[in-house]
Length: 94
Image (tube, rainbow, N blue to C red; front, top):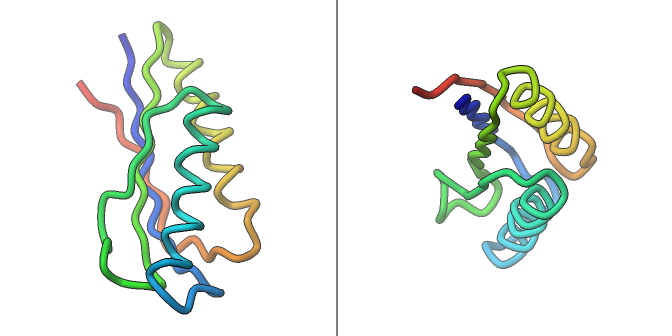
């Protein structure tokens, strides 16, 4: 079993309230879960209206497949013009 985690630290440019931020975060988390079959959640900056850290995890029987899924999730996050990705870090979990 292979588990690859992706942690993405974001600045949400157009957010002017926690409600607006949560709308963007919810879209990212729910879409990633449905489209890519990953686990996803906001893991930091819960009460800051223009920052968020979201964690994604892919579990697979092969390392290559886990990397492929996380590559797709990473591209999905970067494809949103309203977001500025500050950091994107991957970690293999044991």
